[in-house]
Image 1 (spheres, one colour):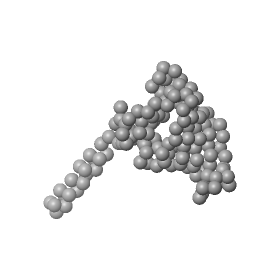
Image 2 (tube, one colour):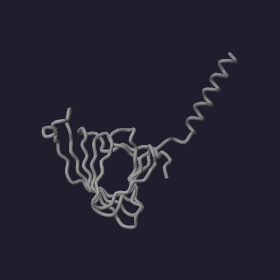
Image 3 (cartoon, rainbow, N blue to C red):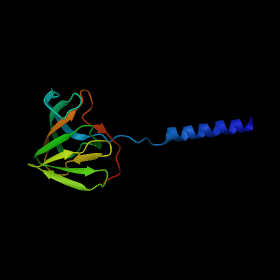
Image 4 (spheres, rainbow, N blue to C red):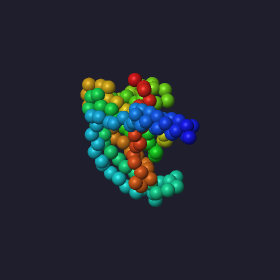
Length: 149
C-alpha cells in the first residue's frame, strides 16, 4: 500500500511539473499586412501534381521592424521582393540572408526548414508570394522560436 501511495504521489508531482512548465509556442507575426490576389485550382495545368493543387498569390507588406514569425511551408513557395528589403533566417544555421527589391527567393518545403522573414530596414518592404498547396491546407505552419538572434 505504501509503495502504491508513493507511486501516485510521484505521478502527481510529475504531472504538476509538466503542467507548469513553459509551453513551446509559435511566434506570431507582427507589422504584416496581407492582400490576397488570387486562388485557383491548377491541378489540370500542373503536370507534376499528383494530387489536387491550389495556387495562391498574395501581396505581403512588412512595416519597418515587422516579422513574419517562425514558420515552415508544406508546399513550394516562390517570393519576389518589390520594395525595401527582407532578411530571412533559417533555423538550421541562424545565418541572415537579405533580399532587396528586384530579388526573388524560394522556400524549401517541410518542418525541417523552419525560417523567419523580417524587415530590419527603415522603409516598408513588399513581397509578392506564390504558394502551391493541396486544397484546404494552410499556406504556412507556425513554429517555435529556435533561439536565433
